[in-house]
Length: 309
Length: 241
Image 1 (tube, chains in turn red, orange):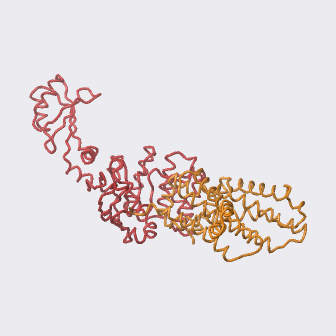
Image 2 (cartoon, each protein chain N blue to C red; image 1 turned 135 degrees about the vertical axis):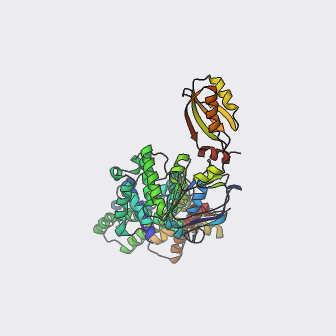
Image 3 (cartoon, rainbow over the protein chains, first blue to last red; image 1 turned 120 degrees about the vertical axis):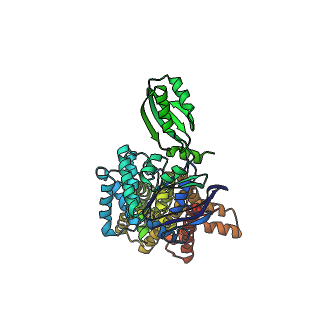
């Protein structure tokens, strides 16, 4: 089921929080929604889920417009809002039942769906506790469980892994990837490795506008960031090595690596990584090159480039 | 309708889970019981088989108790953000409001059912006018529905439960006696209008056994107005600037 966002604009007090965003997400795609705080990620998600109305533009979910048939759209979507609001005075199981019934799961299937969600989200030991008694990580699981309770075609997750421990994060990522094979998933996050681990496609927005759209690989190729090579050179004088390396063409900057003896970080211009020249210089000057590790442009750098002016 | 019942069921459950229901029932029965049976003007003293005292004090009790149960209805959801979760489920604003209204109303009906022993006792003590008792209960239900509607509106405009409670009481006090009090100062159409606006005249005539369509329309309008204003404050978020 595809989600089509058409020229979305949302104004708050005359200030544009979302400024003419258009994109499409297809079935079987996990879209990572990135952007600095206040870029308009959550606002866009709130519009897609029919919580806020756009100032201009429209969103179509599976052919239904959020303006004309919000009830139909809401049935197709599972949503985990930012900060994961929950009824703290309700037991987990009762809350899941309430969500399932509201989402239109038929009575005979409710118990089966609840069991399934409790298993998938690892809530077995906590199912009879009040939500208010749960730790943050477990509350996050309850939030995910209620979003997925009706087996929605479209899953919208606003920062789904906050508050989870590393093991849970891996599990949830796996789960999202699994769901993303057959469904449409849009997730927002600040954690960049998470995007690489789970998303097929990345969309970066800044000040309400899309600044990048593509796979992690595409974004890397397009970026004007630097490449980094880490080397370890022994049997040389530190200053000589740094000065020497700087004379190699394309090298922009040479730094010592903190906490690593004889380690240096060489920043070079993109596509011009002079690995051979570095090796040759070491041989010529009698230094011993014991390590050379090229690093890909980090997503952090791309993000930083695109979202700071 | 299904969605309304699901929401009403959840709200009722949370009343009973959180003790609100029990505290309310005990307080309501204690308050009305004390004034009906123990105070000077009580039933044994006036030597009439009537529940007039009960209907008078129950009306006052609702002025305080109903805002106490409606205050969290939307204010808490606004504060914790669960309103976003609720409204992104396939429900309309109206269904949410009606579900919450229904839950509060059901609790009040239950509280009134608990007072049936008063009626049975009085009926055993003497000859009661069953029609008047029936009308008295009917009037109480109308007044409580009006208070609930006002309370839900008060709850919808804030995210602070105390403020919600106070707003509901202030609006309630106006309808309960300020309008009719002020109406005494004025004569002519102004006085009549103010008198018409107050609960008292309508409540009294119904609880005396006169069910007039004008009184029904009056309570219906207040309930409807409260719900419409609540709907507006829920819908505010989706109105484009």
